[in-house]
Amino acid sequence: MATYNESPDLEGSIQEKKDIDHDESAGDNYHEPIEWNFTRVVAVIALCIAYVGSQVILYFVSSGLVYISEDIHTNVGNWLLTANTLVVAGTCPFVGYMTDLLGRRWVTIAGALLLIISSVVMATSHSLGSAITSMAIGGVGAAICELTAIAGVAEITPVKWRGVTLSLVTFSILPFLPQLTYMELLQLHSTWRWAFGIAGLWNFFGFLGIVFCYHPPPRHNTDGMSSMDILKQIDYMGAFLSFGGMTLLLVGLQAGGYQYPWRSGKVLGPLISGVVLILAFPLWEWKGTKNPMVPWAIFSGQKVVAISLVVVFIAGMNFYAVLGFFPVMLTALYETNPLQVGYRGIGYPLAIFVGACGVNALLSYTKGHIRQMFVVCAVIMTAFGGALAASTPFNPNFAVVMATFCSLGIGAIIVPALTVALYACPDRYIGTTAALSLSSRFLGGSVGTAIYFNIFNTKIKSKLPTYVATAAVGAGLPVGSAMEFVGALLGPGGGAAAAAEVSGATMQVLQAAGLATRWAYADSLAYVWYTTIAFGIISIVCCAFLPNIRRFMTGRVAVNLH
Image 1 (tube, one colour):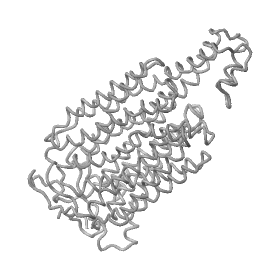
Image 2 (cartoon, helix red, strand yellow):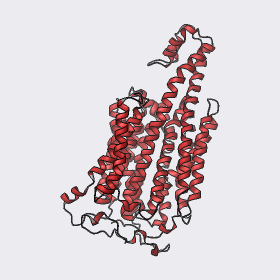
Image 3 (tube, rainbow, N blue to C red):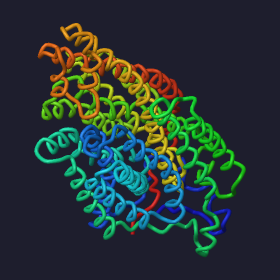
Image 4 (cartoon, rainbow, N blue to C red):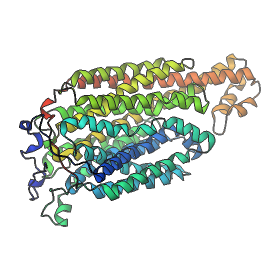
């Protein structure tokens, strides 16, 4: 069995050594023996359940954000998405570091338990505070469980087949692909809260499988060390700089232009402080500690990991553009029948799924030639994402097709790029590398969500009342009633019924205002899709620099389960 081959001394335990990690002499035909007994199979299934459970809470929130926001009486529901992705992005590096240092079993059990708690709290939330708390708790659980699932499965299979095995992990998300349809049906017949009851039950099954069957081998990083020695070598400063920096940066991005002006101290303070801490983080890891949270050995001797992280970051930005705003498009521009919305929402998660599984599996058969494949996928993501800007209230089929192909490109990049990083990294740092990849994805998602919501919110605030007033007056509403009509239709507690009571409001006026509302959303969302083009071009350039990875694709197995 392959081992970590690390010495028990404090400093040497974290430093890179020459071992089987990148032993090219092992050859493509070298394979470690693997015994697939009942316990191993159940453990892998439990890890797959945990992988899915780490994502479904966020997916359900994004799909039902309008309903949830109305029910908990908030107009800043986007903070639910931001809270989750922010915590995941900030927690992942520290979790990966700790699991590589101390082992995965008990950390994974804790993560599964947190996902259960998050599901229960979200299902019973009646205020923004409790909902954000739920999403933050779920973010910690998601960081742990998604990381452990990816790293845990990757390290028990031959390296050359990591693409195939990780595509099977991704395949396990299949039952929840129609999450938008589920949410619409639950809201139609009962309440959105049942979605999180389902998520809690799913995570409970994963929790049981992990408790009884997941027994990874002990890590050798801390052999011969006392508990106090272990506590002393943890990179607390690195954790503070990374988590604190990302938190402050994203809080500033989220508040700027949305809750406060960009020149406000409440925006500039967090933004500047966050940038300073983020810039200080790599300097600290390089010169400030002997036991860094992110060992430089992960990047030494190759550029695959670094480029992959950038690609994952950009793909994460576009992923959350589709995840957060295409459901808004379906409900605001087109048919409001819940079933129709749900059916139109099946295509894009299915495309992400097909792209992720298909390209991930193909990685094992490319003989290392991945550049061309990634460039093509990035072009697809960018072109079709930008094409969504041409969506109008009268072309729902066009919008669905564009979103589906864009999502195919996103899926073909966001998961396979992570797998590419795991091909090239040293085996002893699989957990840390997976954590960096996940953090890049979620950080990209958080930055993207903040940018896109600010763009959309700025545009819709200016366009919606103007469009509605212009259309209503054009349909016969007296000019003197325009302001009252707009306030009745769009204001708190307002709607069509309230607007109908305004003097001069006829059915023709209401219909014109309804169509104008849809156009306001279409034109405002277009700026979100335009913005994705710029980020997509960056991803294309980065993919063009990916090297051949054949030298890493050997038959070695990192660890074996007990």
